[in-house]
Image (cartoon, rainbow, N blue to C red; front, side):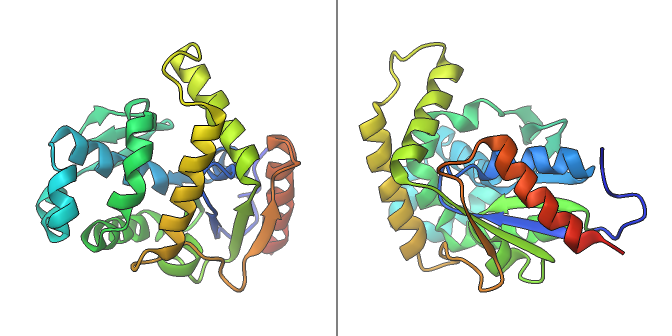
Length: 233
C-alpha cells in the first residue's frame, strides 16, 4: 500500500551515523509510500570506489582539490535498487569493507560534497522522495517536510555491520571482528562529526529515533506513521 493517492508529495530526509539503519529504513519506507529512494551513501561510496580503482586515494590525501578531475563526467544512477557508476553495476562492490574504510575521507572533500549535493537536489526536486545520508536534513534539503535522525549504540551497529558482511561474503572468513568494526564505526563517527564541510549533526527540526532496540519493521512503521501526518491533505 502507498499513500501517494490524494496526498501531497514530500521530501523525507533520514540522517544518522554509520550502520544506524538509515539505508534499510529509507528503502523500505520508500516502497511503502510509493516514493523514489535515493541512497546518497551509495553515491559517496561510488566516488570512493572510483578513486580507489584509479589509485588516487593517497594522492587525494595531499591534493584534495584534485577530486574535481575525478568527478568530471561522473554518472551515478539508481535502477531497481541497483547502483550504476558510469553505466556499470557497482551495487555489491561499493559495500566492500575497503570502501567503508575510506568513504568518510572521500566524502569530506569539498569538491565531492558540492558535486553530489547538486546531483541529489536535482534528483529530489520533483519531491516524493526518501533520501538518506548524513547531511540531507541540514545541507541538501533543509526544507524537507520530514526530517529523521536515526541513532543506535556503537556495539549494536557493529553487530549489524558484521552480520551484513558475513552474509554478503558467504562466511566469516576475511570479515573483521565485531570489535574491529566497532572501532571503525567510532572512528567514522568522529570523522563525520568533525569534518569541515557538512559535518554530521541533527537538524533542530529532526525527530530523533534510537533504533538500538527496534526491529527494522518497527522503525519503518514509526517513520511511516510520521509521514502519514505530514502528507495528509
